[in-house]
Every structure is written in structure tokens, then in C-alpha cells.
Amino acid sequence: MSQHDWRKSVVYQIYPKSFNDTTGNGQGDLQGIIEKLDYLAFLGVDYIWLTPVYESPMNDNGYDISNYFKINEQFGTKEDLETLIDESHKRNLKVMLDIVINHTSTEHEWFKSAYENKESPYRDYYFFRKSKDGQPPTNWESKFGGNAWQYDPVTDEYYLHLFDVTQADLNWDNTEVRRALYDIINYWIDFGVDGFRFDVINLVSKDEFKDSNKIGKEFYTDGPRVHEYLHEMNRHTFGDKEMMTVGEMSSTTIEDCIKYSNPERQELSSVFNFHHLKVDYVNGEKWTKGQLDFQKLKHILMEWQLGIHQGGGWNAIFWCNHDQPRVVSRFGSDATEALREQSAKMLATVLHMLQGTPYIYQGEEIGMTNPHFNSIDQYRDVESTNAFAEMKRKGYDAATILEILDQKSRDNSRTPMQWSNETNGDFTSGTPWIDVPDNVASINVEAAINDKQSVLYTYRRLIQLRHEYDIITYGSIEPLYIGHEQLFIYNRHYNEETWTVIANFSQKRVCLPEDLTVEGEIMVSNGELIDGKISGFGSIVIKRV
Ligand code: TEU
Image (tube, rainbow, N blue to C red; front, side):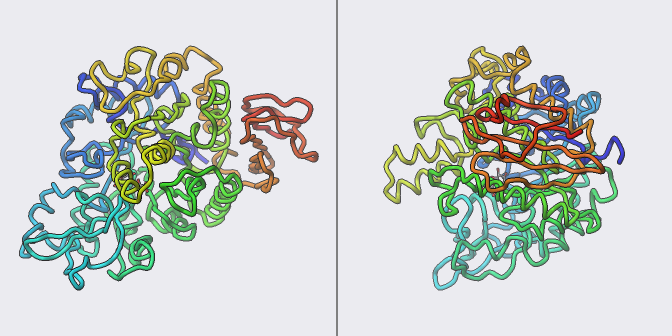
């Protein structure tokens, strides 16, 4: 396989609003990203993915787009983005943009024309439907709480919004809509970007509008025409170009993800799924205080690794993104500095030795933690504030709600990037739009660069290994001792070679299984192996000789 095969790449996700502010307005910007490209080149990643930077009222931090051809002034200008792309390319970094086309903002021209006007040529760009016996057309729930239909009083109809009320779902069954969306993608291809991340792209084909006995997911997830649409999109846009694409797939299946990402089908290059991150939900409910179900985590990850490998698809692999709490606080421990360091390294190793394209979310590479906010006033995210109101309505006491938010809120990952131990972590010279965690004094990029034993150097090493050894990209996977209560162990096989990955998910020393030998060359490790025991949150990767 070629040196330049995109499958050997590692992606770094940037949430521009929280990355680096150069204007002092408390919010990050494109110039701020440009300033930090040398750092990303030092880390060694191949791609950066920017979450949406288009014009937007920012009710959902840019996932509510009002103009796909304009850059949000808060982030800068088109020239800034051009410079960002050029400067990235000089450093061998490629740039992916986020494409949000399941819905537009209700501030988008199309929606503004369609709303309160049945005769608008854009009315059929969205889903406007009549009420059912004075009730919304269906009982589907919005992913951000409440019914998924909003009333339009002038026309006496409702429009569908699977997310916030200001994010109206687009009608992909209308060929004109699809054509308009392909124009957007082609515009950014011509602009010079190298790839795309497609937001909730498996929700674009809606089935019948019928009541559900759950929340409605079955009527729009991996819907009836979704594969046809993605194939069509591929053919009309990036399909024959050298572009890496990844689709964000909500509540999907292995079977569908093979279809989305098997190259023969010409849909997308790779897929994100979230099943392995729902392992601390109680009875499948996000807004609960749960604990990691370690067996479930291993089983889900392995099922997806094996299934996608066999079906010729391709996984995007990740622990963190802008919607998820920090993994070190979540599946590791941030109780002490030593536990944080060890568990962050162990989690990095387990993930980066899997097959697929690894994504690193800004700050993960230095082991950033959840901020542990203790007041609702510190939260900004619309989903979190809605959930807070909903839990209050249900009678939860404030302390319990705060504990749940501390564990589950999307704001856990949206706090500013911690660059140094200066005021506000040197993220801004002004007042940050969301608080900087107290631990910025010790957890920051500057400190991490100066300490060769830091989490940062483990990430660097893991990226280098992927670039150097084909087994990590192409090798098959073999789960071992899957029922073990503390250890996550697997082999990778490629040609005649075998690598073994051993990771301890507990704080305590744990005995290795008796018949597991540790002979071979150690490729990366944290912690120690003494008398057949592996240290708390230790991990080791052995190349068998
Ligand atoms: O997220 C889709 C999505 O369903 C989730 O990750 C969601 O945030 C979570 O289920 C809530 O519990 C994407 C974006 O990543 C997210 O930031 C946007 O808010 C959402 O789409 C709407 O565009």
C-alpha cells in the first residue's frame, strides 16, 4: 500500500470557538488556528477538521448555518480561511470542513422565504405538515428535548426540527434541494479543502411521518433512500477527487456503516458511530449518572472492529469530540495527577492501536479533563440548558442535576484550549465565552511540550507508529480474554506479524492472564510490568518476534 494512503492518517479536530482567540473578544478565530499550525505539525497529525465556521446565529455553535457560502465574522474572513489552508498545506496538513446539510438555521434565506408562506418556492425545501387533531403531525421527540415539530401560525402547519427549534430539517426527497446542497460542497472543493465531515448524514432520508411508540428514530435513522442519496452526492461532488470524507452516523448499524464506507459503493470514506460511548448511560438514557460498563465497551468496540473489517468498510475511531465529555474524566480518572497521566496514556494507546482513522479532539492530546463546573450559570450549550430545565420540571434537585451535567454535558469538551499557565490558559486576552478549568495551571500545552514523559509525547509516538507500521492500518484484529474484568487485550495480525495490546482499565495492579506471554519488542508503553502484573492504568504494545 502506498505511503500516502489516506487510511494511514490521523485527524485532529478543532472547535474554533474554543481553540485560540487573537482578537480578545473571548472566542477563538481562524487566525488563532493559523498561529498554532506549527504545534499541530509537531504533534504529527495529517488532517485538521474544523467544526462549522460558516455564517450562523450560533444557537448551536455553528451547526445552525444561515449561509453556506459565507464565513462567520466572529471567526474571520474567507481570506483567513484561504491562508489557513495554504499554511496548512505548507506543513503537510490537510483541511476538512464540517458540512451540515440535514438541516439549516431558520435564519437561512430558504427558510425565511418558506416560513409563513405556503406559496414560497422554498416551502418544499423543508417538511411542513398539517396538524393532527390539534396536535403536532407526529409524536417524535427533538434530540434536544420537546416535540420535534414547531408550529407556523400563519399557515397553520408545523415544520420538522430533529435538533433545536432553530434547526429546520431539509427535505432531501426534493431533487432541487439535493442539487443545491451539491453546489455547496462543490464550492468548497473548488475553494481548496481536502475533505469533509458530514453532520448527522444518516438522518437525511425520512420515512413515513407516523407516530412512534418510542421517540421516532426508526422513521429517519438510516432511512429508505439514504444510500441512494449518498451515492448520488458522491457522484456529483467529491467522488472522483482525492478527498477524505467521514459521515457522522447517529444510532446506526454495522450493516449500514459497511454500505456507507465500503469503497465499492461510492458513498463515503469512513463512518463515526457512537455505540461505544453510550456505555455509561443508565438504561440507554443520557441524562443519568452512570458508570462505565467495561464489558459492554469492549464488546461493542470489538464487534465494530470485526464487523467493519469483514465487510470492507472503514471506521473513524475516537473517544472525544465536541459533543462528548473528556475521556480521561470519563473512562480513566482525573482524581490525581498521576492517575490522570496514566489513564490518558492508556486510553490513547488502546484507541490508536485499533483499525480505523483515529480522531484526536483538541486538548485530548494533553489529557484535558472535564471542567467540573458547579453552577448552571457556567453552562452554555443549548442541549445542556434544555436538559437542566427538563430535569427541574421532573422534580430533580439542583445538586443532582449538576452532577449529571458534570458527567454528561457537551460543555465538558468545549472549554478553552489550555495553552499555558498564564491567565485563561493564554486562550484569550479578554473574557473567555466559557470558563477555563482550574487545572490549567498544570495541564497546558507548554508544560506538556517541556515534559518528555507527558501525555502529549504518547500521542506523538502513537501517530508516528501508525505512519511507520502498516500493521496498525491494515492488520486484522483478534480480541483476547474478552471477559477479563480489568484488562483490555487484543492482537493485531498482518502478513506474518503479530502485535499484542494490553491495557489495564483499573487503578490497581492487575495480574496478566497466566498463559499470556510478554515476549517481544515493546513499541510503546506506560506503567510497568513487574512479577506478571501490570500497573494501574498501565498499557503496553508488544511486537512479537
Ligand atoms: O451531533 C449529532 C448528535 O446527535 C449528537 O452527537 C448530539 O449532540 C448528542 O446526541 C446529543 O446528546 C451533531 C453535531 O456534532 C452536534 O454538535 C450538533 O448539535 C448536531 O449534530 C446538530 O447539528
